[in-house]
Figure 1 (tube, one colour):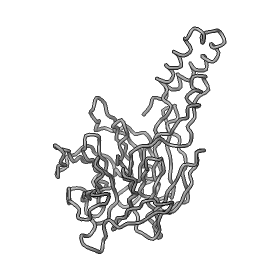
Figure 2 (spheres, one colour; figure 1 turned 180 degrees about the vertical axis):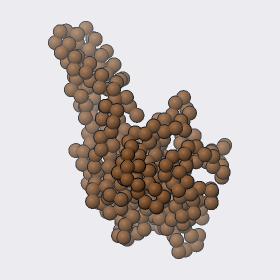
Figure 3 (spheres, one colour; figure 1 turned 90 degrees about the vertical axis):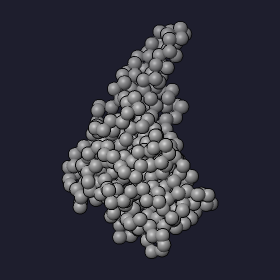
Figure 4 (cartoon, one colour; figure 1 turned 30 degrees about the horizontal axis):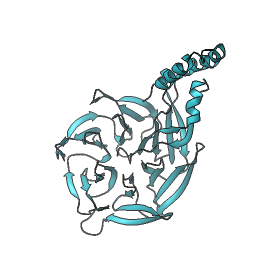
Length: 357
C-alpha cells in the first residue's frame, strides 16, 4: 500500500510552498523542484479494497485513512446475499447474489463517489463471478455462464452445465484467469481445482482437473506474476500454492500459509496478496472477520500476513482491489498545498475476481 504518513507530510510541506511562492521562490525555480518532490512522496492514488458482506447484505469499501487505520465506505446495502465479487478494466463491480432469487448485478461508479446498480441476469444459481481479460463476465455455481455486452444488451452463453455432459465441477465458488485467459474454477463441495481452456474466444467445456480431493472448500483462487496459482482452502484454514514449473502447473500443491478460514484472494499490481476471511466453517462468527495482506519484498512473498482490517462483525467473502483515478487538477492541487481528491472513477486494471489478474 502507499505510505500515508509520507503523503501527509508532503501535503504539509505543500501548504508551506503556497506561502513561499509569494517570497519569490517560484522565480528561482525551487518551487517546481519541491512540487516534483511532493509528487514522488505522495502518490496521486491509493488502493481501495472492496468486499462483500454476505450475511449482512452489504458491499463495503475500505480506504487507508492516513492514521494507520481504514475508513469503511458503503457501495450498497440491503443486497440479498452478495457473495462473489469482481471488477473489469473500466472499474465496474460485478456481484453474484447467492439468494433464493439469485442474480448477477453490476455496480458502475457514477463519477461522484456513488455507484449505480443494474441487474445483468436473474434466475441463475450465482455464487462466484469473474471478469475475463477479453471482456466477458463469467458467473455461476453448479453451472457456469458467460455474459458479453452487445449494443447495450447482455448476451448469455452456457459454458458448463450441471445436467449435461461433460458435467460442470460441483459447486463452483471461485474463479480466476491465467495470463492466457484460461479459466480456473475452485469447488466448494469437493475441493477440486479445474481449468477451462480458452479457444477462439470461447471456453471449452471439456475441463482439465488440476487437483481434486486435496483441498477443503476452495473459496479463493489467484495467480501471481510468475504464474503460480494460490488457492484458499476455507474449510482447512490454509492457503496452498500450485507451482508453475516451465509453464505447467504442479498437480500437488504446497502449503503457503495457515490462516483462519481464508476466502477472497487477489494480487495487486505490485505482487502483494490480499485475503479476506474469518468465517466459521458453517457460518459467520461475529468479531473474527478480517482483511489481510501478504507483502512482497525483493520478489519474495511473505508467508505471514499483516492484518489491515480486523475484528469485523462479518466475514468478508468476495474481494477486489482497485485504484482510484486522480484528475490532472487534483495532481496540481498537491503542489499548491490544497490536497488531492479522486475523480470517483477507477484506473483500468486487468483484475478479475477474488484474485484474478
